[in-house]
Length: 325
Image (cartoon, rainbow, N blue to C red; front, side, top):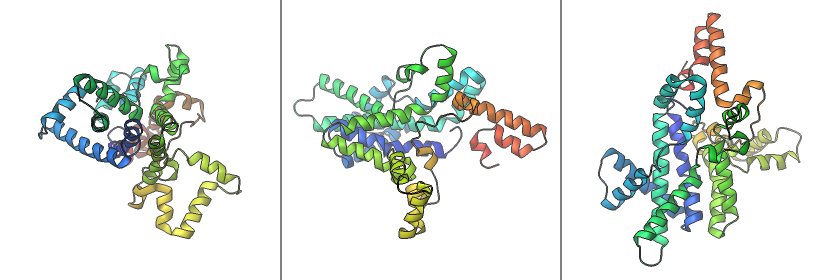
């Protein structure tokens, strides 16, 4: 994620996928209304942070959100905190610098979602808007944001990844980046068991990621592929894309494989895939993201000692620099 311009852009897709669904499902407003509120509050928060000037009501709302620290970026801290214990404070500082834009977009995601949810709850409220009602609505709005974007910390880890044992530390390394996926699926399942509006919100979470990043971005993808595989011997995914291309042409196939972004020639498929399982295939995979960093740096050194400078540099540095190389 570090130093990559694509990462913060992809991060903002949660304002289209999970955030409007959570606001709609838990406040009772429609999906279009939730989207409108998110767009408005995202713009207002950006103006608030850049000092461009917004109305007093929105200023007070964002100041209260920031006073509680509810806007604080959490996703990138999960990775950095695990890396710190392995590679030291110097690496943490480098990663904090590299994750600056990603962290900024996460702050925008959380602040805009809280503010939009608050506005939605206020719009649906019947009766006098008192200070107590305001406080309760703000707390519920914060909870809606947590359901949309996840809460990072030991309390939300699986039981096997808690504690101070070596096994727990390894489990936390392996579980890095799984929290968002886990939270996304649990929120979608929770909404699916609610009223009619909540069920619409759950369906939104199930299908919209596929529109953005291709079929594999949908939580329903694995189930679909399993069902399709019962009726064919070939790779069901590739066969499905072949059929789509046959009936809709090249652009139809590209849309199915890579979503709306793919039609423009950009793939965010890998970033949106909800792969919760992804079991280790080697012993080093058990150590998750930190293990990957150590492996890549070791491979980089090995190539450098052989005189393969570009290959060594490519493996040893973050992807933002390796890509151009």
